[in-house]
Image: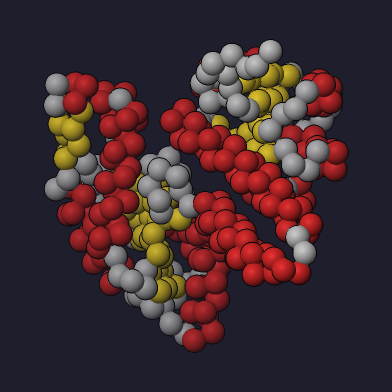
Length: 334
């Protein structure tokens, strides 16, 4: 018998010792693929031995076997299965060193956004299919004789392009198409080292959309996503070619400004604040209800703030942003 019409093409396994999380993820992803669930790593390994599975989402904090421990076993036994870990934001630093060791495709922080989660999983399954297709193509190429050398060269180029695109996707925020936090940390450390070497200033602008939860609650998550995309567009339109913008959290963005003093960075933040405050969001589902967007800003700089540490420089911008929020929002502190 063939598969019934509209049968899922992929199977996802979700492992979490919290049943509520399992049910929530299953509801979100059941239209993307067939979803299996397990409440422990051991139970998950048994299911994987029983049937084909393309992708596993596993919680990091579980008794007896953590998510990283589970993925170490999975990478050795089933290296082709895509691996995504579910974690709290405070655990991210601990995961960085283990990412390459266990071959993680992505990590997802709690609480997750269902819309973004669906996109991430779809991309992950596309990644799996592309890798599977690549392996098939390589096997076919190995069987070709010398008369097909040109074809081999062409296909190899295509594979390199595909892998390059996959690498780009792993460093890009799916919703706004800005770079993500992982890429930003690497870029920030690189730029600060350059500033230290050549005695040039470098600045950071951290911004956060005001009352973003209210926007989602009143207008809906679709309008919230549109607000994030509008902010990203404003940043890209107003920053210089040498500047670098990224989305590093739910409604939080950051801009890295090489060779920029703190007063210059504050001027840039003010231009962005004004541009954002002139922007309106609309909800067709709420009878074209509209509301202006605003954002709060925190600014830090080297050498003005007297720290040579990238993590501390970002923390100073975060503290300044918090002060802007406490003082009424839609303002700049630094």
